[in-house]
Length: 345
Image (tube, rainbow, N blue to C red):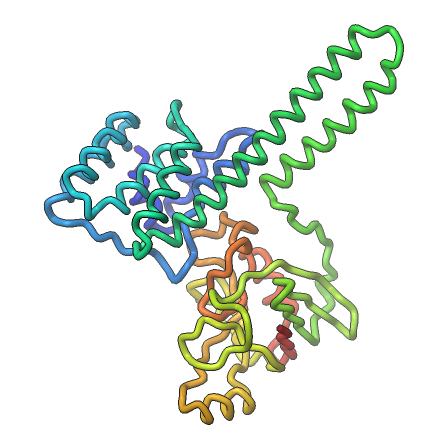
């Protein structure tokens, strides 16, 4: 099956994610391109605003991409931005994806980064801005980590050559080589897993409390005063302070319980938190506003579970607490309805 265009891939569901994972490089930069391909979680998928006049040009650019003619695709995008400047944000976004695509033998992370940075600067109100900010952030991380790994590999090679040319001190040098190899291996695993917790959990033990510490971006499952497991989390887009009203994108603060759960959530699985409590309702009533609701602990938007730990680098929810899909599966099993939820500032 032929590859789809970058925009089609970014806006389709799980059936296309397998194809997107083919973009990943082996094995040194596996993490790098997983980041480059990260479509975005915030508030569902973006809507494409194509003018009827520009639509055929975008179709041509995407067709070139599908056929693997990336230079022609990029040239077509440049023609679009000259002829239809109002579509510049979409053009820059799609060009950034093409430049970062691993199947492009002339891929250029720096040019990809420049596309997203230009979009952020020149189109501050664009619907692609938040996506571009996350892309720029992640590509910067990829570049830095790839440079670090390449430098360490060069150091390993230099030490190996030195060890071969010296008749003494070989054992000491070999130890340095081994230590550096271990460090590089660790960094490669960090790139692909982002320091993912390796934890063997006692499946027979359930939590009686969920502690959420907003400042530390941390969720801890607790049973009889003992910590079972800790997770990195993402919060609402306006995380400072308690939730006060509907639409403020804040995560609540206070004591609640898990009062229901949803296996058919748009975010894999979700546990509903009993916000608002009486204190929240009273505060909202005094202000003459609605306190809001639908606060959940949930996973990643359906179709994008492969984003994994990357999601926690940005507070992207509307007030909920987000973890990875694997993590919400654990929490879902270990935290029954009635579990106390304490959310601290």
